[in-house]
Amino acid sequence: MTITVHIPPEIEKQVRENISIGDIDAVRHLLVDALEPTVEALMKEKPLLSVEEFEMMLDQLVDEFMECVGPDVPPLSDYALSREGIYEDHLHSPSNPHALACGM
Image (cartoon, rainbow, N blue to C red):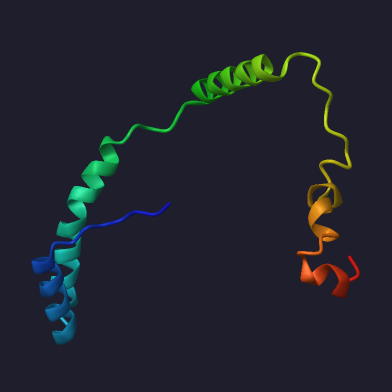
């Protein structure tokens, strides 16, 4: 997870000044205060899906997929799902300068 914290320029200036004089307590307090709006925003975000909601969403996606491809779509072969099958057109391509050098 990546969280972006926006620190106003005046707070950033105070943090830098307190770092330069070694006042770790002041830096800590400034950063905690700066984090407060970000924490509040995170707490308001929609919570994660429950297991039941997630399964229901997956069922909907499967139903939509089946509507698109139909019931008679053949399964992919083991070769199609293998590394060789996935990269087959890249391994022997003239645009791949390493193909010949690596014996691919």
